[in-house]
Each structure stands twice: as C-alpha cells, then as structure tokens.
Image 1 (cartoon, rainbow, N blue to C red):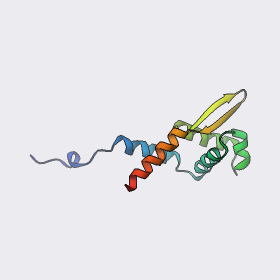
Image 2: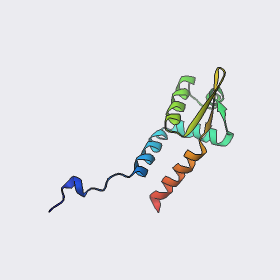
Image 3: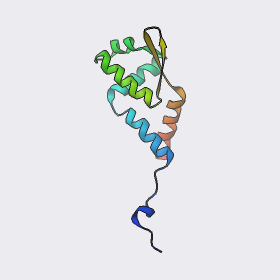
Image 4: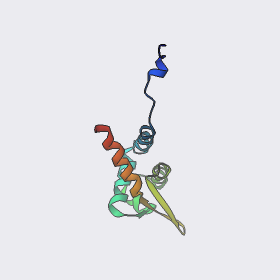
Length: 103
C-alpha cells in the first residue's frame, strides 16, 4: 500500500511547536531588548523598562504581555506596579531547543 503525501510527512514534534511559540514571542526587536534588560538586571518595574526604551509605556506593556504569555517573563503585582523578571527555566529551555537545531 502506498503512503499518501500527508502520511509521508514527518509530523511536527512537541519541541518544534514549543520552539516556534518561543521564537514568535521573540520575533520583535523590542521584545528581545526587553528580555535582555530583564536578564541583566534581574527584575524591573515596567516604568524602569520604559525609561530604557524608545517606546511608549503602553507599547512596552504589550510587549511584556507577549513575553509573559509565552512564559519567558514572570510578573508580580506590587501595589500599583508590576515587577517583571525573566523566567530562568524558560530561558534554559529556549537555549536547549535552539541548540538542538544544530545538533
């Protein structure tokens, strides 16, 4: 019996899907810059990030939401402010997934 074209294709792995999700979250240079700030500083309040970026507060907040939804960033509400930090386990996973591309 002959395989159909769809059956002959290799399915996407869970790792492929996970890497695509993380890559999509990093697909804007502002999000890369924000993540770099968070990894270097440890944690930041949104206003501190805004002070470092040539972007409006609402724009930075939207980029933080994308990073948070992908699991790359965590946010903790502290009164009227939200303190953000990079999620170390997610960054390690990203590093492992990207490394697997060249192995």
